[in-house]
Length: 171
Image 1 (cartoon, rainbow, N blue to C red):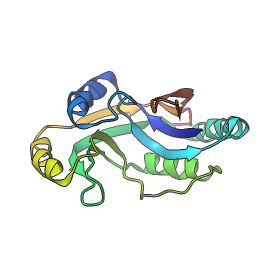
Image 2 (image 1 turned 30 degrees about the horizontal axis):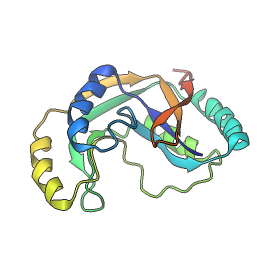
Image 3 (image 1 turned 45 degrees about the horizontal axis):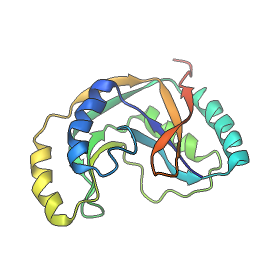
Image 4 (image 1 turned 135 degrees about the horizontal axis):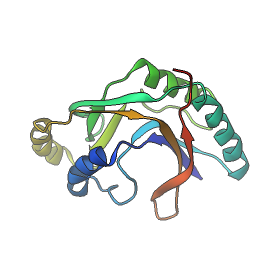
């Protein structure tokens, strides 16, 4: 089964992201707007129990972090995804690194670029038409994230929460 670890922003940020996702993101109905902290990996029922325990241990060492979006950006030409850029704070980078160190059955396929996707799976002409317009929107938000969510993918392609973990490290 496929799993991933994400942080969900506030409803305000989700609603703003969804106002674009419903038009430009074919995954709109499959997953709530989120910032991936640990990308997709495979695990069976026995492995995921141990992984969840490992995640619980990692989050005990990390305090809540600030999720700060600063602008709209794009991964083009690598992919035609458009996203809200999230500032890569030391705490967030450390959390990502520690989650990668706990023995998942995966390999990072991309460098960690914290973001919230608002558009994807477009052809180049669609991307080139939409991106300049989206770059002009204000995408500045700042809020505290105090929990992470281990998600799993259902047969219909949608994602749901397996377990939620509170970031409880010492201040």
